[in-house]
Image 1 (tube, rainbow, N blue to C red):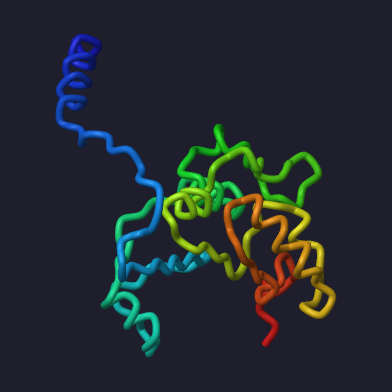
Image 2: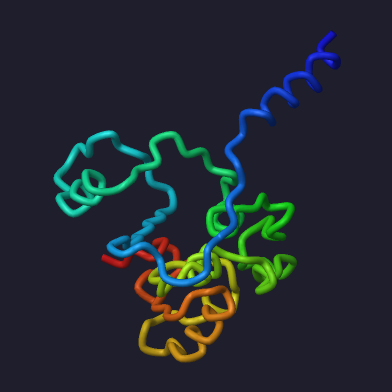
Length: 177
């Protein structure tokens, strides 16, 4: 009986999906800026137990994902799903980029940077990327090859990049205070 219900339910669900719209090339609508903040290993607080005025302002004036579910528990696979919109099977990121068996995110996979650029946005990425192992080699901000990093991030759809503010994979997880 359950197998007979599935095709009928699928057909009914398909009839109620939103119509597909083609992406328009050119300029984004006037007045729209997008600031997307992604943090690792942080609980969502409906209201913070301590004062965080900047976050509270962003939350009050933007969009908050209150029901978001992580597609993976590990940093790199979870980030690959967020930035590509694809499951890890399609993005090819199954594990942390630190391991020799895990290749970088393919530059052939479209990211949110590519998509927003196609819509006319200027895309910039600031902070931890962790989808290309060659961006995680420096141990201090002073020895970071920033021009090389920008070139790498251009291949992922971002026109400028500064990611050495959070040094990745240190024993303190990037926090050094």
